[in-house]
Image (cartoon, rainbow, N blue to C red; front, side, top):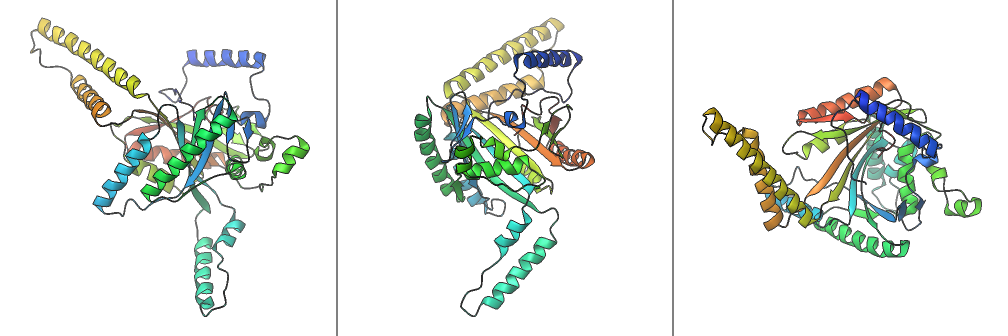
Length: 394
């Protein structure tokens, strides 16, 4: 959930590689390189109430939410939903960091079959129940990859201690649930066991190992909760991909080139029948700081425009003719400043990460290629996180 500064290109220059090698050597000398799979998982403690102690006095909670049928809604209903969604985002001030996570993962087929079974009852409709359950089993058997699609919002705050964090996180949780209710979205908070289950699914993408855990096991053995969710190994030897046990993975970031993004891009990502995780890391900027930033940019653009006008006069051209980029950026900056000052809108730093996994290397490359094609369709680029897989692992 940290604000990420990502490279603009997918490949490192020779100078960057040398700096990276030097940093790795220094980290190795200082003992800062994780030596176990547990050390790679970046949190300190998961509590039963669902509060995760990430470290550095930073605490988080997580909520699972479901879809609403936005695309099929009437235009008037779409406008209402969009306005409520804007209000939902504006709720998060600069002190709250949050991320939206969208997980397409391999399903536990045994658990999935049990979930579609309809128990018989003492009435005359058991025949209908058996027929409907049979239809669901038929659809399950004809399914493509047996994927489950889940959605989460994880939010966190800085606090002096766990007690102060608990009070504030519970208040934020109640507000988020209330906002989801206004949107017509079903949502529920996750306790510590459920959050560990989600992490276990992410770290065992092939579904080869069942999650077996109890809080008594921690108290009796002195183990950490990370010992129960960690895979057999993490391997980050290659800059283009990594391995979680026997499964290949690749993390990429979305380089946004388009002036505007449509929500269809995320929908297209999630419609891919591949195992993947899409995360939107969002940090609200303090309102006064955002306004000052835009004003500085406007000042810089005015300075550049004056310089261009001076060049035009010296060359004998009309001084009103300036590069179209300056005019476009200037108008966009003025519109953004007006929105921040008069419409009570917020500015956000957003980093979009896409993590693909597959059991074969070639399958992984195909999955990444498909995702990159969707990004290109919306005038964006999906860049591989070269030698940053471990730091940026969602």
